[in-house]
Each structure stands twice: as C-alpha cells, then as structure tokens.
Length: 156
Ligand code: FES
Image (tube, rainbow, N blue to C red; front, side, top):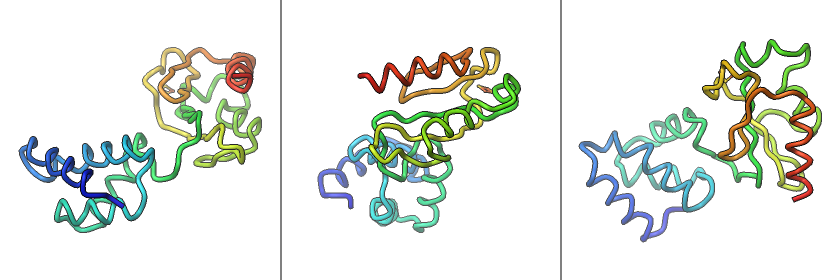
C-alpha cells in the first residue's frame, strides 16, 4: 500500500517528467527502493495515482528484471543463461547454483539468505560465464570460484 508521503513523492516524480507514461518505471523503482519490493496493492495504488489501467502497471513491473515483485533475499543471485555463458561446461552455471542451493528460478532459500534468478545477459559475454550477487558483478566463473564466493558469503 502506498501511503500519503509516498504518494506525494510519486506526484513529484510525475511533475518532473514530460508525461505520465514516463513516470511508470521511476515510480515503481521508487516504491521498490522504499519497500524492498513491489506488492500487488502497491501496483493497484500506483495505477490510481497515474490514472492508468492496473494491467499497464503490472506489465511494466513484470517486464523489467530489476523490479522485484517478491521480498528479496539478503543475496540475490542473477545468473546469465544466454548462449555465451552456457557453453563453458556440460552443466550450466545456473543449474550448478540451483542444485547447490536447492532452489529454482525465482525462488529463495528457506533461511532467506539467497534467491536465484535466470537472466538473459549481464553484459559480460566476452568474460563468460557471469553472474551478479546484489550489485556485485562476477565474470570468468568456474564452479570452484562460485563455491569460494558463496562460502565467503555464508561465513559472513
Ligand atoms: S551472454 Fe552471458 S553475460 Fe552476455
């Protein structure tokens, strides 16, 4: 639910932009920044504020991978599953991490420490395979390197 203070901030975002269309993604990003993720009721409230059909807000929110519709884990892992990043081993990096954590695409470990997401490209095609954990970028990965990175996170 969007409270009065958030509504006023979103109205401020709208005023700075040439049209209401331009305010959809910045408003969704703002909601996520404040609340950590974007709930269904947030999207319904935003539709009212922007005077758009709810479906328009829902489609934008579900299109952009940087917008999260579920609560985030402490360490959100995005693994590139595009061709360059999938040709390195017989088992893909995504499948390796999925097996290691016991979770699939879009899922979170029961302790809330890790969530996993398959993405199309992380812009590191020449340094494949690649993944991101929160805002940290990792390239030229091997299964051993992934183990080291994740073990370091688990140990804190
Ligand atoms: S194909 Fe994997 S980062 Fe581009």
